[in-house]
Image (cartoon, helix red, strand yellow):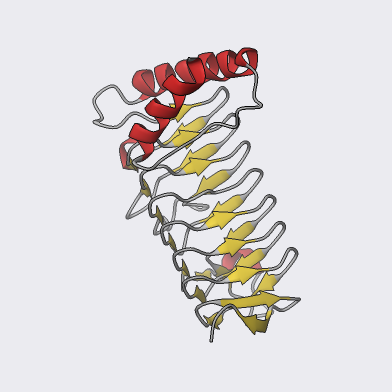
Length: 231
């Protein structure tokens, strides 16, 4: 009975059919349900006036909360962190999950605030990941990330050897990732990368600035096209 009730509730919340594996015991489901209830209560406490309250795990850090915008059924899992101070803030579409210990950081230097972060619907942002959003990060719907991924949307200037690098300022092009992409574990994506829809990046790839064709499978350091998912 509990499984059926949860299937109905989750399907309604997500807007699509959802079925829990029948091999999962009722004790496990009760623990999960209680945990999610406490996460929702934290969402009500942190964002009492918002239409959509996120599920917030223990130890979540939030800065510039007024610049964080949520769709439905957003999850911020335990130990995750968002610093939304930026010109555009942080937008997380419906059914987005920010996994354990993952971070969205929009501003590294308050002398020059960052651009911000935007994720579409049904995006899985993975665990132990860093989204450095000073130059802006845009992620299309249905894209998923493995663990230990890092995105860096700005670069330090280094041309003047007579001035410390830390004082030479930065350049920002931003990072754009299309819909329905899979970014594998320990991938590093650098400022200026524009990734088309449906792309896959192999674990450990380094993705420098450039255009990456839709539906390509990429891998290596630097990442190169290995093959296309469709002609």
